[in-house]
Amino acid sequence: MSIPMIEIHSSAPEFSLVAKGRESLEQGDLASAVEFYEKVFDPEALDETEARSMLIEARSHLSRKHLVEALESFEEALLMGTEVQRRQALDGILSVGELMSRLGSLTPQVKSSLEEASALDPGVRHKIDIVPGEENIVLISNTVLDRLPGHLSKSPRISRLPQHLIDQKLSISNAKCVAYADEEDVRFIAELAKSVASLTDPAPES
Image (cartoon, rainbow, N blue to C red; front, side):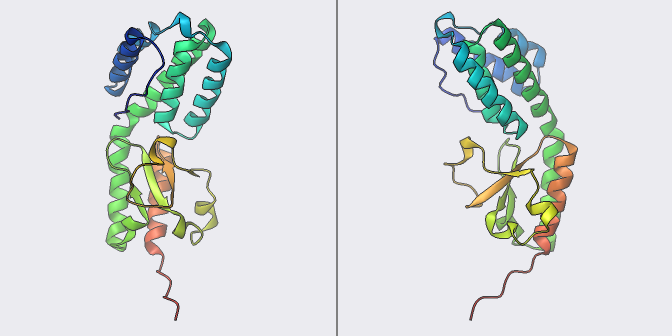
């Protein structure tokens, strides 16, 4: 999963260490990622209060499986936090890395479920679709959510778009999303896609 680098407010050496840590993380080399990230610290940026806010924000993103935003916030906390906060940030970064490492096996399953749904309804990808690239996000149109069974439409797995996708041109506009990071998420997406494909388009108003 490739994550675009944020503009980190720190010196070039610290930015370079973050970049190397992230590269190792994306390659699934968690041990090397730890070595780079452990060296990241900017004494001039020390701000315990801001680091605390960044950790809270990062954990909120992580709970929604919004990995890009979670990683960015943990990295910021790593730069400006106390020793204890930096350890918490590093633990969070490793949690993100572990989730990222699963996507290689999960994404093909998600794509397969969407292809099966397309066989039932060729137009289904206008209603539910995966974000291309190395994201872990499936879009679902708001226009179909209210027509789905309650256990699907009201599921906490369905959330607003991650911040980094809001301004991007996506295959479905006016969408919410499902972020996936485990087999249960994949099964939910499969059920969701099948349910969307089974919907009959409403008759046009006369």
